[in-house]
Amino acid sequence: MISLVSNRGRLNILDDSNLLAKEVAERFLTLALGYMSEKAQFTVALAGGITPRLLYQKLSEDKYAEKVPWAKTFLFFGDERCVAHTDPESNYLLVKNTLASKVAIPTVNVNRLEGQDTDPKEAAHEYENTIKTFFELQPGEFPSFDLMLLGLGPDGHTASLFPGTKALNETEHICVANYVEKFGHHRITLTYPVINKAKNVFFLVTGASKADIVKDVLQGEEGVYPAQFVNPINAHDEGGNLEWFLDKAAASKLDLAVPMV
Ligand code: 6PG
Image (tube, helix red, strand yellow):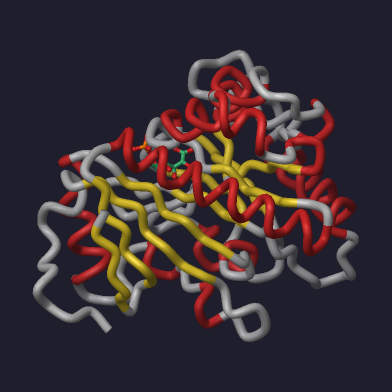
């Protein structure tokens, strides 16, 4: 693994997606055990899409299935598609099939959205209340997830913060229904104030198809892509940790000779 510090956080480059999943699973376990001893709970906002599938499968296997303190691990969703939980597009279904149904995590610890397929705005409001209750937030306060897993779309979106959408400017709400023109429907997403308050933010990006956007986001002009506004390092209180986990294919266009600090 190549690991280097950049002004966009630590870059961890693994040979392939399987090794990436194993490395992130190791880090997940380390964080879980660390927060368990510190505060007897580990809170995670999960990424959707295809990339994290290997990670979730890895976490459901032997060592991780046994060693992660699942009874005190609490899973949330960084974003969700506005489809039924039985729909192949559902991020909840991905997590249920690859992880939640395979490890000893209490159902109540997997905080899925409800009603996202019938009333996105109401579902976002309800999910926000779920998060506020769980984290015992004061009015106007944002939660600080111990770990926020994120992916990167070819257009530079992350979670469901897509270019040109309203949610990019959201500063009040924890979670919103975000209309995405190119899909012709809403997505539900956590917002930047939440993402940037996380103690650890891990981007997971694999495959040659992401090489161009990885190059643009990490070494291109700043302030262009939604993923570039993820910056927990500047979180004024917690000083969050931002790391990128890339396989060689996704990192193939990065100029690693250029110091990025
Ligand atoms: C989603 C995600 C989204 C995803 C990127 C990358 O619900 O789709 O949260 O932000 O991480 O689109 O998706 P892939 O991993 O499928 O390339």
